[in-house]
Length: 88
Length: 88
Length: 141
Length: 141
Image 1 (tube, rainbow over the protein chains, first blue to last red):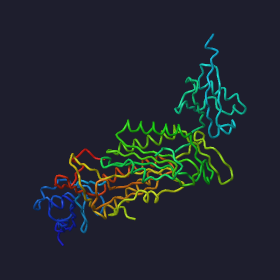
Image 2 (image 1 turned 60 degrees about the vertical axis):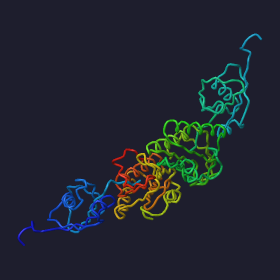
Image 3 (image 1 turned 30 degrees about the vertical axis):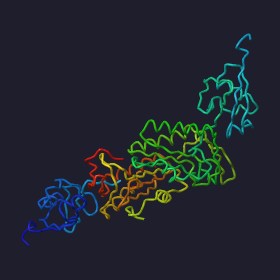
Image 4 (image 1 turned 120 degrees about the vertical axis):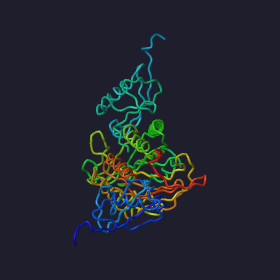
């Protein structure tokens, strides 16, 4: 192999509530050049049809725990993009 | 009538819990020279047999509301002498 | 429904008495009979009250809370023979705002302990019996 | 018993799960479905959750409270179709000390609202439907 720059990773993205309405799907697999951050996956989603209605820095969770946009993602991660929470 | 100094008042005293045990009664009528304070009634009770086990300034209630030792009592008042409260 | 009762306290029923669709936050406090007091094992106890004043003082405390916060408050204190684990006091405060519900609930239980004429006679595992004096004992819930 | 349930919440049962003779103070909070939101009359609503994360986040919040205070905490959040007045969330904190019970109960409900992935779709009297965004609305219990 020549370079790590050719490596990719695939993240399983989950969308909920109003964000699922915006993108018309509840889950989508996103393949990106590695390494990548949560923010890079969100940027990819915002380039999809309707995706510009997502905020640039939504609440996100990686593998069932809250994550920041600068956190790294790894191949096989589950990344959830969370609309404003309304529990309680 | 010659003087107010001959006037008296009678207070209906209630005793509870450990204080009823100390004095051996749950109620007693106390007649005192008028005017008189809560503290004067307590001093009268402390002169009764066993009464010196009452504290000099116990918690008191006059006519169903907390009262201070310097508060005046009137003829016909109900004066309760309250051991340390233990509710809740 | 009086504030002082010799019947078992029912938190759910008390809560229903103040819950309403415009009051989305309901905070409650239950005070239970503990199994120890000052290091001694408690078997059972008896609460007694100066009934008419206890009713009047509870009413004043509830009025104060309802004046100070936008809240509906329910309060009951049990008297008579209680077993370890039984609820001795129950407070419920319902409000549109949980800040108010928490503050009112806390206020009421503190004032009940400070002002309501109720006494507790405890029966210990070692056979002794005593009137409880919280002012002589720093350990209380 | 999971933290997220589609069954009606039972405060008494939840309280029994943490009450114990050494924990004399039991504080609880119920969050009810209100009949209004931003000035509009609410008929009914549906709560949905990111289930696995909601369970994990509730467990973390309960662990945090139980580490920070000497307290036993029970927590449930309901999902599915709810009517006005139904309980959506219930928290119970039991402790030997009521300071701890109140503090832990308050901590848990604040963190649930801040961190647990649950969403609410409201159906209004005027026929409209909306996902609720509390960050766009200062009025909440």
